[in-house]
Length: 370
Image 1: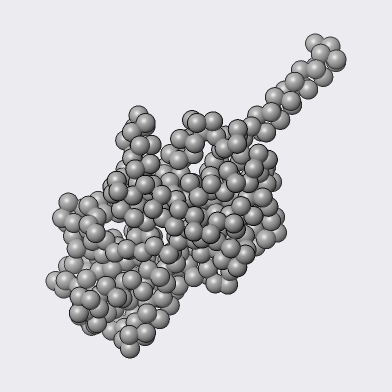
Image 2: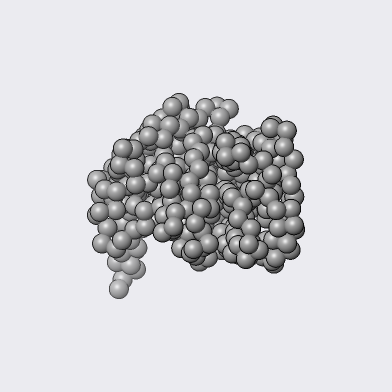
């Protein structure tokens, strides 16, 4: 092949690549896919929504492409993935990161590269206060979940309450929320017990809490540790009310608990996904019907779906040539945006998003009851 011919072919390939890139909006995600099921379900829900949007021509003539890397819930891996998404894939936004330590790890990168992270699947107070200009929360904070927990327990006349938490930034954030809300009602925890995130040995905590025989146990733990704790605690013969934060939400979590899960309370930051009276739940059901493989109808899937809808609405308003800055300006303009039954608000000094919380109970078949 002649030098001229090679140059012509190379130019054609470059032009083709540029056209393909111009026809897509690249969004980056780093999340745990190889371990706990919740991150996978969040991503399934997001992809469902993006797929339905792309099937209708995308946003302003461009298709949304979500590039997802597995970070195994390792903050160092999350940072590496984020740099790759920004520098190699040229993502205009980051989306749907999960786990408090991993989100906190990339906060400096958001400011360095002036790129927004939209709808992290964490309710940590550190992501709400102080306000992070490049971080657009969707879900309510863990402190708001804690407030709902405490009021719900007090309505059941339970005031002898123990606390079980993971010994890291996520667990300590939950602990702070629990103690703050209990103190607001002049209640001191019966006992506070922690476990190491690295070792995942919950046995000492089981023993310490069982010694106080509480009426209820408020829990800030990862799914695996929560499951182990509940199963071990059931063997003590005590039957306290277990109540935990929304981070454990997944179909596999309730299935893994089996018979030990009956009566366990789980906080929610999304409405009931099977409630067809809610607009976005109907949208989810419709998107699921178009899939060849069955999709689990869970709160985690719905949260990913709603998060993708939020991002899409921002892209729609950002115009035909969206940039990170245009997307942020679009999101900031959303005052009382209705995402189909879920109101979301932002502003120059507001990145909180939604404040929805609800307590659900695991039924005898492993299903969640409101």
